[in-house]
Amino acid sequence: MSVKCQVIMDAMDTLAPRYLAESWDNVGLLVGSPAQTVAKIMICLDVSEEIVQRAIAQHVDMIISHHPLIFKPFKNLRTDLAQGRLLAELLKANIAVYAAHTNLDTATGGVNDVLAQKLNLHKIEPLTISYQEELIKLVVFVPIEYASLVQEAIGKAGAGHIGNYSHCSFQVAGKGSFLPLQGTKPFIGKQGELESVGEVRIETIMPQKIINKVVKAMLKVHPYEEVAYDLYPLKNTGEKNGLGRIGQLEEPMQAEEFANKAKLALDIANVRLVGEKHKMIKKVALCSGSGAEFIGKAAYAGADILVTGDVKYHEAQKALECGIDLLDAGHFGTEMPIVKTVAEYLEQCNAKGKWNVDISYDTLSKDLFTTI
Ligand SMILES: [Zn+2]
Image (tube, rainbow, N blue to C red):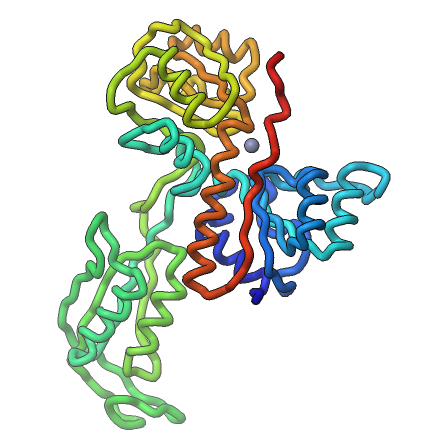
């Protein structure tokens, strides 16, 4: 069996919403069409020549990668150059390519959270804040006998979530009045007669992203032909998220021991430690891929060590100046674990949506660096 590519795109957007991506990034469907059918998916870190050849040989219909295959705008599509050749092969084989990059880094349960779990961190929080959910207040006027029905419908659609409480709302009774004009079919009252009805004002709060769902659910059960409701933008914000994480180890340990544990957990051949080997580590900051730019932030947040990849000499120097250790576990090493997580997530969607799609993930690609 198969599903439309759009179905997979929607599922990926639920895991890693595209609005979480950094402004410089290029995520989403990069090759192919949302309308094409997908029966086989392969998940990987990079759309390399090797991955494309494997995808073609295994009749894969869609590749989902962490790093975007198309990043900078290109001025030609030459098949004698690597990128043009890959794109030509993908198009010829009708393989769609989707990228979830910084949106997957930032997303709850994404690359950074997976890395934090691998490192056995607790009390995990974002290291940086690049996204704050906008909140909206919904106010709707309902005839008294329909109040509980409307209240239930908007709660079920997700409105009224405050902390660990759902269906939060406030009601106050009052009097609504209206004059049905020509052409109306009023639920209460008659055309041309000023009507006065006992109504309830229901107010609740919701994230911007579910407005359409909540309003649709509210209109479905509201008895009036023309529903009076207001949507207010609020200054309070909801969920906050960003790149990197900071958390704590259950038990403090020496930097060297922590480095060895990280090596094992991430299944990598070697790591590079900057700083004192015997320093006690309790608070750990991390940023998957290339996160040395957050050395200052991690030190300011009180972290004893920052785990990341792609660390340069002068960045190591800066870490020492800031009094924080650095663990370079490699770009590949800190990001590769997400490939399996995305596959497991899509397998759950597969079972739930009865897609019957074949899902595999890359286990063969190796780090580009070999230590001799
Ligand atoms: Zn990366």
